[in-house]
Amino acid sequence: MLKASPGPLVNGQTTNDNRPTLSGTAEAGARVEIFDNGVSLGLATLQPNGGWTFTPSQNLGEGAHRLTVIATDAKGNASPAASFDLVVDTQSPQQPVITFITDDAPGILGSVAHLGLTNDSTPTINGTGEPGSTVHLYQNGARIADIIVGNSGVWSYAYTTASPLADDTYTFTVTASDSNGNTTPFSTDFTITIDTQAPAAPGVIGVADGDGNTIDTNQITQESQPRLSGSGTAGDTIILTIMAMP
Image (cartoon, rainbow, N blue to C red; front, side):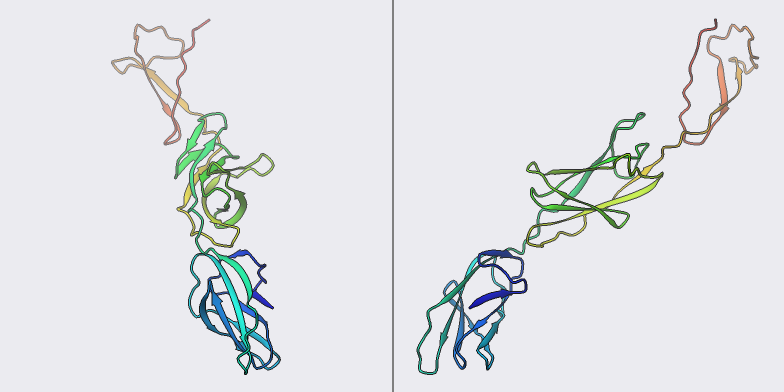
């Protein structure tokens, strides 16, 4: 009998362990030799009860391996070869990245860049990765979602109205894993600030003509380009609307 551990692995399985431990049974006192694709890897450690184990002293290369074992007794009689096939894959999937965040809330629509501002409490996070790999999305260091990358190499995650984000600053990052347990490092941080609160209403201090003379409310003036002044919150944009008098 021949098997790989831990797991155990199934014959023909892919593993990211390039030094798998093999184990089996043989006649007590036999000499047990392990071969990889016909090349000797060394002798197994044999227990008095006939059980044996073997761990390669060097990493197995990437790709397919046929591991065989031959037991030889003290008289030189060799057993038929027992084999175990496996594929070694220790390569991490393609590094996933966050490319942009989508804002579809009324106001300013479109893509939000790193360090950008948005009024969308249910944004969509978009990125790329290796098709078939699983992207693990983290928000402020906490894992919040696992997303399988589509055949096109893109992935997305959308917050819903059932779990909107509160106004705050959020940092997102991703890592990816494949079916063999190989993982990537974390991606570069992607940070946004959510602000859904309307600014304080601006105030009008006064209106003046080109000479600086105050124009009172409902006053008639010949000034075609009056100068308005007022107050507001620093950084806000003031929108002026001119309405015709009835």
